[in-house]
Image 1 (cartoon, rainbow, N blue to C red):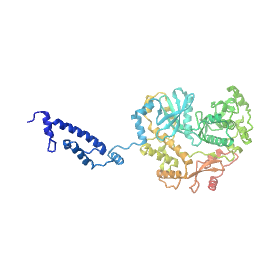
Image 2 (image 1 turned 90 degrees about the horizontal axis):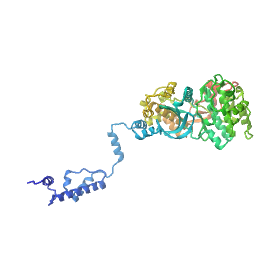
Image 3 (image 1 turned 180 degrees about the vertical axis):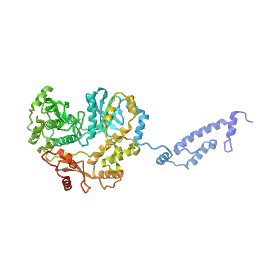
Image 4 (image 1 turned 90 degrees about the vertical axis):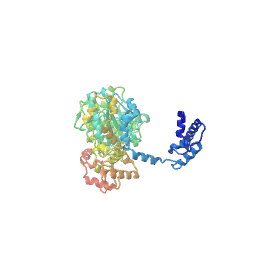
Length: 563
């Protein structure tokens, strides 16, 4: 007869293998001890705990240990993590996250990213890394692109302080930068906006300003000055061919990308005008670089103003000082109108003659850009050519006809997780139009700054990422080794479906137009990419009136002779 609950528990669990304990409490204590030893045995024998039979609770400590040893022998001592991960992925029905999708999702789920946005440490795909400079209406920061890990410069403008004239200039700055494709001109990647700020994401030249270099280290040796000046000259010539006048050329707006590679930037005062035909009447730029007609006449021609600024810049580069110096703007104006300056004796006669021929009071008597390029001081110096005109929107790229740079950018986009599905959602516009700029300049918006940050414009972000990769591809293609060129060729063939042996390109000097050009060494006809001689109209504009451009067949035969 069962007298208590304890007797009931003892009777139900007792079996033929159960030890005969005189006191059921001793049996319970021994079971607890066995359980503790079992946990120790699990940790030391195998990371996988073997299944425990319900009858094992009725074993004593030593018998239970032997039972566990026998059962664990059938289990592996080590786990293959690769097999485990592979099985987990096979069982998981969700698609694996790509870098792009993970980052987009983080804008809605990642608390740290939201905190960085709220505290002003991030904008879109860009994480702030430091300050570069500050102006009256803007400041420039260095940022890191989260997907490509590329450093960029971001110009941040306060929309609340802009008047209508400033907005027009800003709209012109954006559209003009997107029209230019030159290795010595800062590239524009992306335009973003919030309720009160506008962000221009541009190429980062980390070497600092030419002005800082000259003021800290003094004048340049003439052989170095020739390299720097020729690059600036080629960049200005490229602008004028597209009827773009810079109007603010100065040492502060020339940036070192590498030790001897400079890039012209800050197109805030740039405008569209036919160099010697369209009259301009807005005073722009810095007074020490201002041409005399800006102070003297009611109008001026943009091309002549940029040429004058080139002469001032050349003087500053080879001497370390300015040709016209004064304590006040009024006195500076009188000196510029008089046109009297002296060139130090250490400057070579060829350089001195070039400076004097540029800084002439009569705009029509100044040397043209082509005359400067053909001057005796620049003899033997190669001028960089413009880049090939590439599609700035990945959605408008025809893959079977893609340039190597475009193929590389599309390939890297695909690796980041931006495939055909994402590209099909992009607009087909190749550049930022005026409507988009005006929309970005609107002050009143329904969303708050934080809402705009979180609700990421994915289309804009994809185009910005593509342009960064496009610029990286261009730099790689011009500087890479033969092995890297073969990799470019493989990537290009994979994207375009073509079967090209090599994308082997090299820079060759054209003795006719004095430019450096990218020539395909594997092509039988010596195809010339981005060379002015390919375009008879552009070639005619870049040459002086006394010279006539030769036939295109003659130019090609010259390049075949070079090869």
